[in-house]
Length: 45
Image (cartoon, rainbow, N blue to C red):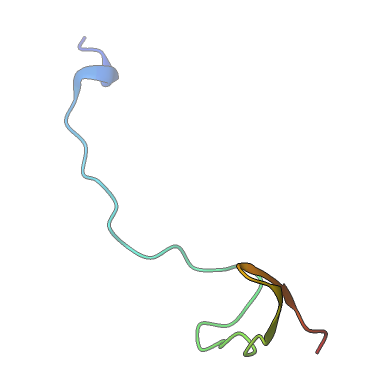
């Protein structure tokens, strides 16, 4: 009997579906404010 470790397997190239959100979910647009050069924070929604 041959070991399963040495068998060639296909690599999964499919997208992983979210079990939480529907497939057509679009995240809300995020707004950021720069408080100093190169330092930003996300504004509350």
